[in-house]
Image 1 (tube, one colour):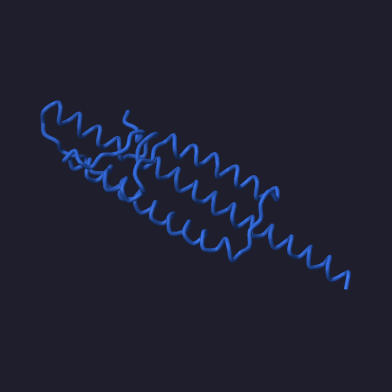
Image 2 (cartoon, rainbow, N blue to C red):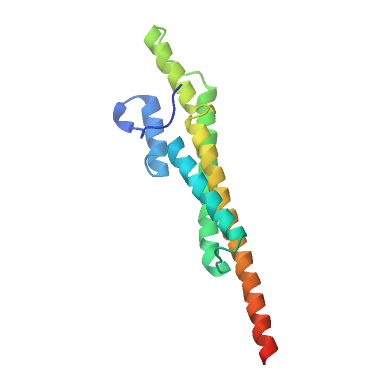
Length: 157
């Protein structure tokens, strides 16, 4: 089964290569299951750290990052829907055996099966959500610590 574990090269001249290459370029080059799994692990750690008070951040510092994460989530979701649209169409690469094999490979590469481009994008979307959630929790922790500090100083005046 094809996986998205190799950087996509647009210079192959094939339609699938051009589409995949353009997608990879739009997302910043190679992105694969291993990379996204690593990012997911780090995003979960960041979320756990924020929940436990391991880091706090002001709303002013976090908001621009949260906004960018929102924008990236939208882009990833759009690209994933495009890939799912491509996967829904049966590619034609000729009636010969090799053409049928290439068409099947292209279909699997864009479909939602494990290791496909659509699945990698789905997983990436959730990484972005976790990073965004971590920042939101860190903002709340910051506000809580500010309130405690304010109360402490208020009592001493």
